[in-house]
Length: 319
Image (spheres, rainbow, N blue to C red):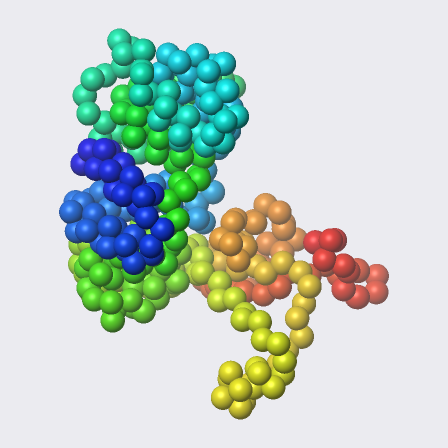
């Protein structure tokens, strides 16, 4: 699959503010994409390479991206920096810089494929240690040098994680249901996303196996579930009405919501936004290892600081 097919889809998405139209555009594209490409396409549409819970991020600052754009386009750093001050969007900067690309001899003339774009972005994300910044810039410049102005725009946005398409995860789920099942099956598709937190996985299963595929996606240790968040109501009476006249109340602890995954003695902690917190709370890890005897488990709770001398809860800031 050529990357320009994805870029063309992004151009169409960017041109509308209608969620229904976005859903139709995505559904049409998903039907057209090969099932082996759809997972990557969905990740990139979210401005990322992996699910939210994967700790590996692209990690390339705007300043580094602008250097890559300047080198690959031959436009010059001062021109690119001035354009960034005016536009505020590395994607538009790249698009305008590449409209009159001067530098052509250093790069391949072959059309850019989605596979090559993704593999290069992965290499950028994995580059670390001494000289990694220069390596990231060189890799990005090579990638941009093989891109059209439209492709360069969206590659530059992917690398920042800011796609500016207005496409939410819920819109992608709508489109997957329309493309590979029916609108009435939307709840089953969302359930698969809620228990896996992996939109790319859901998309690939839908593309390969339809609704039967996503129905086989279940809770799995070390793959955090999406958090169910409370809905605010203005009064106890309104709460009771919403709940059909019967409900339970419990104290709200002022701490950090944590989802703990235990597997064969190893513990991983995730926030409600799916960020990994394992290294931030070593005492929680030790406590869970000591008290949980099951071979595998998923536990959720509130992490609250406690005064060891008095047993009283400390302010949230102490977490």
